[in-house]
Image 1: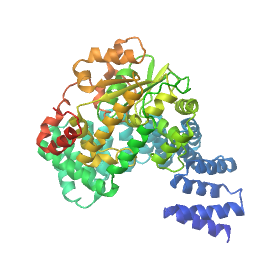
Image 2: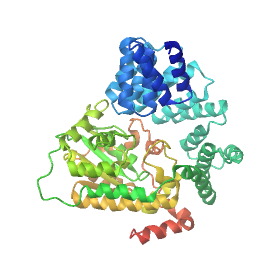
Image 3: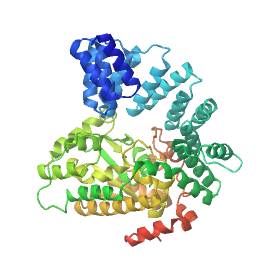
Image 4: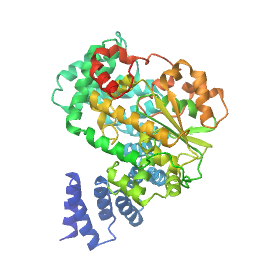
Length: 528
């Protein structure tokens, strides 16, 4: 077939998001002429969308070798490298793209910003988004991305302006409505409830709109004290995604059981030879329990930098256990690793090496991905000198906070969070797994109780810093002055001094939580 026709078909397949067909046509193009850079680029885009990240990187590098002046080739290489947590390579490719981008390429600068956010280069990302928004001020998506980046950096006023601009340009930018609701504590005199209610009334049956609008309303109604209305809106917002995700409690239980079975009990034999690295500090726990607060306290110490929520350990863990698919959790991989053994030193060294694009400038760094609690057995063995902190919170407040929060729908971690009793079941699994890790690795895990931390900040902060092997520094009591960007749901809250307003929130919803309370107490978890 003529090469021009093949290329047209490959591009058309990309536009239709028919990735396998696009890759097939591109492969035939490459067979005809391996020196065609666009053929390699098309193949790279198709394989990246199929989550075959390593293959995509190879194609993009080949395209760049053939035509190094194409900014889009470098941008896509940066995307592919960031997707595999190869952040050094991603930052390098992003820098090459930035140098080649035409000054008026708004879409290119927007993509650059997205990649830089993935690489934790938030200031550079904000600059890229700002430039894109200046080039195309009538593009609601670009204004939203800039608003999100400004939220990360703590510029709440600037974020509010950009999010309102996004909504003004596109009233159906549902995510912008939700993000705006989170920026401030709303009042009866100043809120968005009327606008959100009108939009929600016309969004029935539309999953994305219904989800974001109802969750925004739940937040704002709670802010003004309408707890019944807030709970109803939260339930409405969470129900549609749950039906699509088809969450399975039995599948989740199988995963937790497989993780625990790899470490059956305290071992009297010599510990495995892990990495010599001593700089990681892991902060884990159920989401919405105060992990970001603990991270800000620890990383306010002059010897500690916050690396944020890194997905690096799950990625190197999956590769070490033989996972070839995009599926992050697979009990079969765990069983196979238990049978074949793990190179603990390699696992630990690979993890630390994968973080070096944004760690290493200070003696210690925090990794506060909450769901690293799943991997604590592997972390403890691979990084015997790493510090581990687990944040706990009242079980009802923990479950309620997970129900109230709309987590990133593309994340593999949060399928449990769309139903209150699914969350309760997940909490029970978490509680049992943490008890198992504490038994298997006595003395390794320092538990911080959120309620104790916010009511006795000084004493608990000192114990926390001491566990990390650090001398006390008063900066840890002024965590709200920490200028490090925050990308979690707590981005706004941790920029103010310690407060106790979130304690006992579950009591406002006590009657609505009775089935959850019964489930937890039947599992032996005290809820009083």
